[in-house]
Image (cartoon, rainbow, N blue to C red; front, side, top):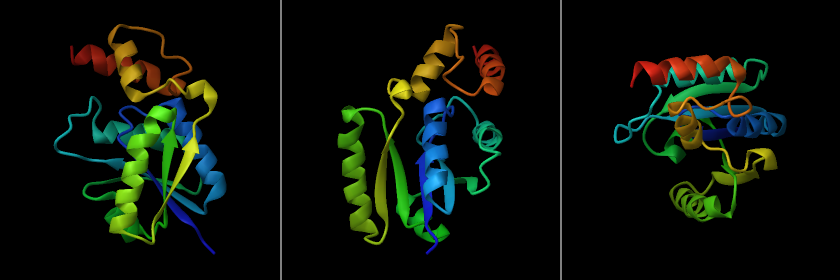
Length: 162
C-alpha cells in the first residue's frame, strides 16, 4: 500500500529542525509533499520562490520528497494530491495544544486524513523560523540553525530589506 504524506508550513525560512522532520518522514512514507502555505493575510520575510528554492536544494537527495505550495484548506489540498497523512512537527508541549486542535478540526473536515505528530530531535527543540530571523536581524551566527548554503543568502536579504 502506497502512503503519501504532506508536511505543511510557512518555512520562512526552512530550519534544520524542519529538515530533520522531512528526512525522517521520507523514510516512513512512499511520497512526502512539503507544502508551503501561501496566505495573503501573512507577510513572510522571504519570498515563496526563495523558500521553494531553499527547500528543493536542501532536500535534493530525498527522491521521494516534492516541494509544492498551496493556499486554502490543508485537508482539501491533501485530498487533492492523494495524501492520507498530515505530518506535524512538535518541539515542545507548548506546540501540542494548538496542533491537537488543528488535527481534530482537520479530522472533522476530512475524516479519512490522519495527522501524525513527529517530535523534533532534541537538539532542535528551541529552534523556529522566528528565532532564525531574529538572530539574522542582528547579524548573529546562523551555523547549525539552517543549511550552510542559505546563511549568506539570508544575511543578504535581510541587509537589502533594512
